[in-house]
Image 1 (cartoon, protein in one colour):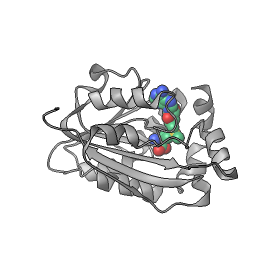
Image 2: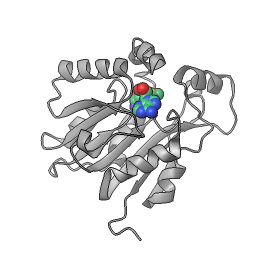
Image 3: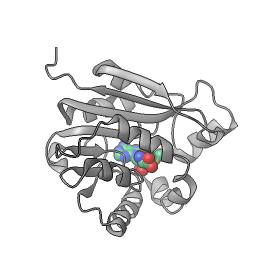
Length: 207
Ligand SMILES: C[S@@+](CC[C@H](N)C(=O)[O-])C[C@H]1O[C@@H](n2cnc3c(N)ncnc32)[C@H](O)[C@@H]1O
């Protein structure tokens, strides 16, 4: 994760404004009940740009585990936690393909995968593993960028984010979830393609 360690130095400056509305939409789609003491896995959490919105919607009873492979990104995330005094958020360094239930304190109620599916090296396997960490009846939200064909901006996004935005990144969730839904979000040229939000629930009784 040497690139993201470096990128962490200018990630927030470059991207924080660009995804603000999409982050709010993701929090909304997670259906977080502040009375329920829900646990969210935010993977990849990057510099923790989603923590504020998630923590506010979860309330003091809820909690967030932010996980990422890059130590540089996590250092920024930890600074954000301290700066904002987010006492119900902690981070762990882990690869999406190998993160364990022990690391996250058991199955979670919600999965938040924001700009992750286009960057994971093996997205289907990654999602399969993430899904195994979600409790039956839990809910997952995936937000990412999709471009059928790459324009100049799309190529730049792929290059800078080490991403592949031609992936249909919602499909692993669609294949597993019940009550699956997907919609496009307002997108700008600088996103490199169309931002989408996908959401669905893990069946309580897997067939
Ligand atoms: C485009 S950033 C998105 C970060 C954050 N979700 C956000 O919205 O700002 C992609 C993140 O994926 C992380 N990442 C890439 N491959 C990973 C892997 N195999 N396991 C865990 N995190 C990974 C990178 O370190 C980086 O922080």
